[in-house]
Length: 602
Image (cartoon, rainbow, N blue to C red; front, top):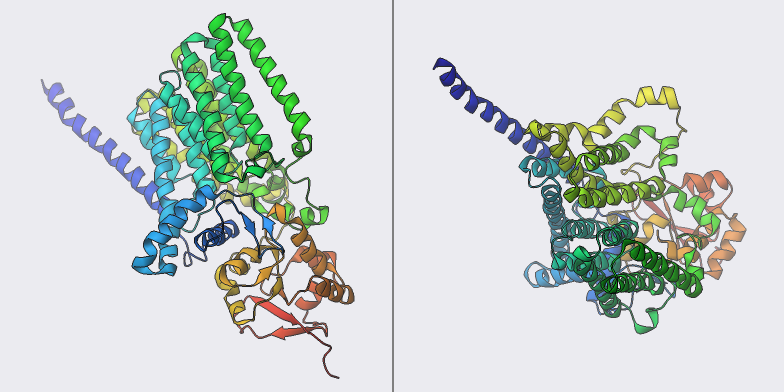
């Protein structure tokens, strides 16, 4: 009897201890997430160059620029046609216009810059918990641990901080949405159609998630090849919704002449052919299977559809199948693209900053391993879910090896997969699963990597590289505020300053961090590398009014490549006679010169 009483007394204490641990872990995760999502400046200065350009695009739409006109007319005149989509501009513009009569234009923009990314983060959190629930057959602790991992997914949180209004956060959400519905494709044709709609909406915004979306689509095709008739209706619904919605978005976003344009970086002919052609091929496979159902016939029809689609794409759009940045001048690649953080490869990170690698790559790789083990231990009814999760995460991991921009999506997708796999493999863990999530989170791996830097430096001896600090860099809106006092003109400025100048002033700029702006960026780089007499001629040819440099953080690569070039001379205080220094104030990060209209008096 005493044993029964003793156990009855102990149970509530143990339960209370578990609940206390759970609440403590969740509370700590929330606190860390708030810290990671916090900004150190005003929201306008918290924006990246892409966020600022998005704001410029939204303002253009509000001020009457046509819905289908994406040209930035003040960038490298007569303008650069951007590869972005109006689908993100629309809700941002709507929010600003709704708030403007209440609080004014400036505050309406500020509130929108705060609220939009946080709303998308809440949506991502809900979607990730739904994925964990589906993959773990409803285990509550898997959903909580997935939420904790989401809040500690440092590589992704940069896309959800206040001020982050570019397209990355929306595309992460839409990929998660596609995964949620695709996990239920065997049960519902409606969910299958919603998966197709999520995919087309993401691709209409941009192509960053194309490899992951293509991987999920291939997995759905593989499901039909394997199972045939039992999933035929759902697979046809997926393909039909994907094709129909993609065509609908193309008609809504693009002028008619652009529907077949051979672009490889946005919605256009090649992408529409791939989506519609692949979807039609999948629907034909379903139709053929209704006449005669056999796995060998489904394999043959799939191979035939893929071959026909590939041959058609090569025939119609061979020129657009080149590498994404093939059109860039080698000088632009070496002095700009190779130094952009989000395009850095894993190999480059290992060479320059190996201590950063664990925080970006360790958690997705660990999750892949655990998910593969779970696949082999799962029952046949759950196998497709694990195939889908593993394939999606593997595609994002592969992108991350090429460009680290894929690490954000990989961290988000890995969060529910790890939590579900751990719940399936170790059901007795209970609330300890949340503690495990903490131990394997990207934040933990990042902390371990930073702590191990002295040891890593001894073993690897990474190449020395000077990273530009946020305090000294020039790319925010406040950095160019002094330019408003100068009369309207054409400005040669560092690439990262282009968006801020467009947002804060009425000046025209030549350079900005976008691959379609090859000519403007090339002109700026050649100018800064040129000796003084050649630079003068170039300024006259481009009808430049102002030359800018970042006084607090000049371009070291340009200065080292051309010690007697224009930027090197300006940094040393050697002003050519054809340039007149402009007084922007002693606290300004930038320095500016105006091109003299005539030679100075002797």
